[in-house]
Length: 561
Image (cartoon, rainbow, N blue to C red; front, side):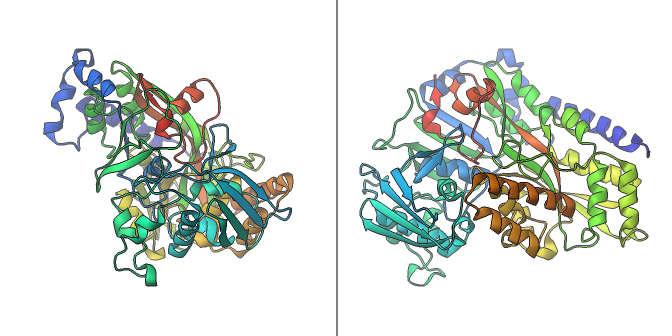
């Protein structure tokens, strides 16, 4: 057994550094942001908290301000905005069931090819325009034509969308797609007339830019909240829609803000002054411990179907050799990671998130074993030249805890002669880098959450060749066998048979080893205890929370008490 001396020393230094940064309020923040945090927490004035409660304002930080065009964005911050600004035909409950939203009822043919939805007749868009079937058709056509955001969910399966009358929508599929109802939680319905009245020059023929410029800072939705102000790279501010067809809970927020930025000192200052009600989920463990000491601030932990992956670019040397990839998979001490670096998280036993229907852990696991790592490396074509290749590991600057994993890979890799270079990368730069094969890092550390409530969502999103070049799939896989397995599973209508195929795909991916499934994230937030948050309360009671990104943040169901 090779010694762990180097990474144990690294772990000690990391812990000391994080404690020092927490005590100092963070090294990267400007000095003028520090004064509020200089007082002991117990001496902080209570007036800010009172102001936040009486204003019924709910502010939550995220890694960046959202992209509020539902035909373009797909990241966490954007999904959080969509579920509040827009309505969908159906939506996933915390229990994982698909419930009516714009659709009151639906039927499907025996072969699964035709779906008919009956719409509510009392829904208004934010400008007062009634929502009809024509708006649903327009929204389908827009997202499928543009092919961005969640367009990939529909392009492979939707043939036609028709309106027999103003409140009936008939969808015909090109082939059966078993999880079709679940993906409709990603079809956000836009106001056709409003978008068409705000077209600018663009690449979509008579549709010009399809309203992309307008929708970058306006909404065209019917959701519980409507955009008041969009400050690019800062925040989205939205207010409650008075003519919303649905119900707000008692004391629901009247104003919501999704604030871009995760810097430790800034978040602590904002929460100390009660200028932020809920923190993002990207703080360091040490930062959470400090926030938990603030008066009236609690912590929540919930498993929401998010996995941290170390994605390996299978087209770039030396990551194009499966034995090199397996060697790196055997290098990590997963139990140590979830107990010491990320306490509360869970070792990932599959490329599918824990708890997602179709998940299985009945497959061989990569465990910490340096002898096996050395054996795998010895079998690779790079066995004698591995040190000649630079292996760059990119971690996202807005998620500082990812650096711990990057440095761990670097430190342990040295014992095998790997030349690992750690790179700190801003999120938007990373998204741009991974759009091209040659600028995609050898290893990318990224959290990915399911787009809909079934294992097929994660398997398609992460490993189908059509998703290469997105931040969710930086492995650049183009495996025809794997593509066929995924496509076959998704058209299998029998649930048990489909789940068995999902299990076989998970085994195939494990053998291919295009990524390391580091851990299932225990999503953590610090939040003020006067905030009523259904998902946090469910998690505390050991009950299910939504595994579909964004749907734990339907702010109309929150309360400011």
